[in-house]
Length: 79
Image (cartoon, rainbow, N blue to C red; front, top):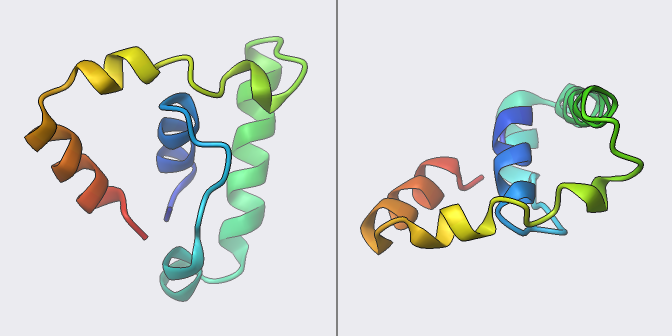
């Protein structure tokens, strides 16, 4: 994970844990605060009480994508 947008996409697809090691190497330690603040803003905008409110909410749409598209999305977003 190397951006707040990628973090949101993975969470909405069902992730409850994100690995950001490579993202930290390329983006630096500020990446953590950037992701945290983006997630907090998104939750406020949606009046969600917690992150669990958005975990997996787009899993069906992600799973409906052709396998090749899911794999290319994962490869480009993998960090």
